[in-house]
Image (cartoon, rainbow, N blue to C red; front, side, top):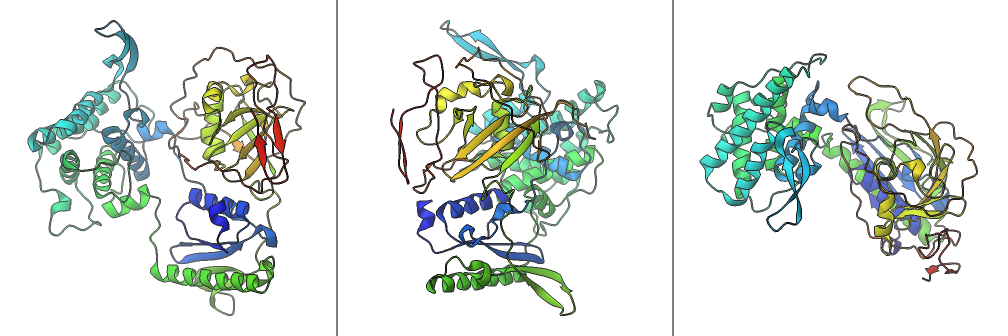
Length: 539
């Protein structure tokens, strides 16, 4: 926030919603006007966000969220090219990243054992492992110590055989695909054994070429060989990494082939799907960038005239359209900037309602799926109960280790009476000077849609807010931690936030925290000294 405060205005043209949210909240906290702009092909828009001028912030309007797919669909019953591409991205993570973070990890159950010195250790029970995990493990060991091309190529062919032949045959024998719309056919071993020139190394190669099965096999093996000699190998898929893109394209097309999914994708089209990319039009970008500069001139002029809060009259909301509109036939449409949305929890500190099953959701799942991924909090502090007692916090000087014990708890088993139907949870993020109240509604039964197996934990933001009941006063009692296994279909992708925690010097003195005092059986607040501009906590 102090860094943003040194500027007269901020121009924003970032390429994802998460980053735009971050900049929007920093500008709100710093009181700096924000000129937001974006393009989608031939379409574009420019608007000014400024709370002091009574203008809507970026998050006052609902933003399109990233499309996610049930894990059971990705792993077992793909029906679209995008399902195969997501699967291939997980395969990349399995080969080069942290195995446990890939949805394709089936290494077997870790069981406790004794090492040679008699100390406790763990070993993996491979009896439950998939057919391909052993070949993956062998390859991961080879790339750390082996540069022999033939050995690496053989290891690559073995992975292909296990993934696209043995594993498919195993699943067919188990009757996994009896009700599936697409029944897979194992990849021919003759295709895996055929040697052709790697597509990307041909003189006539273009990124728009669509590869055959033999081409995909050759490209996949080439990528595995190249990875062994790479100076730096990214642990997670990156659409801008050529090796990652070629491997994902080859693996996705092979999976599409065995499930008879069409059309097969070129490297160019795969990159667009994998990175959620809409091709940019240079002229649209140039026009919108020019409009941003014009809005910046209007803001600077208002500031020089001593009227920094008059941006509603000085600036405009401008749309760039593809087809001529109205009788005037203009491509640029100008309108008055909208006022803040009264229900925006970012700039209006509104209360939002959240419906879920409070008897199945854990605090950890709530943090990942809703508070961080959906609402965009980076370093949240969660407060519950009439006293506003902290049940979890992150950030600088936070007692994160102490509150870790609350993460695996079911919501209704949390301290301070837990989260029940009608409970209100206050969420703060000092790094963004952001605060919101979440009002919970309990719902046990949910509609199961096509492609879902009914095990994923669902939620709904919005709807009718229940009347909050008086929270129960509870002593600090942490019951023995119980492990709650997350279902396969809980989460596909998790976004990490690693912002540095800062306390805004303009933070309202109404903001306060209460924490557990381990010296007593009950709840108490730490002593604190408050001033108009700062909050100082004294241990």
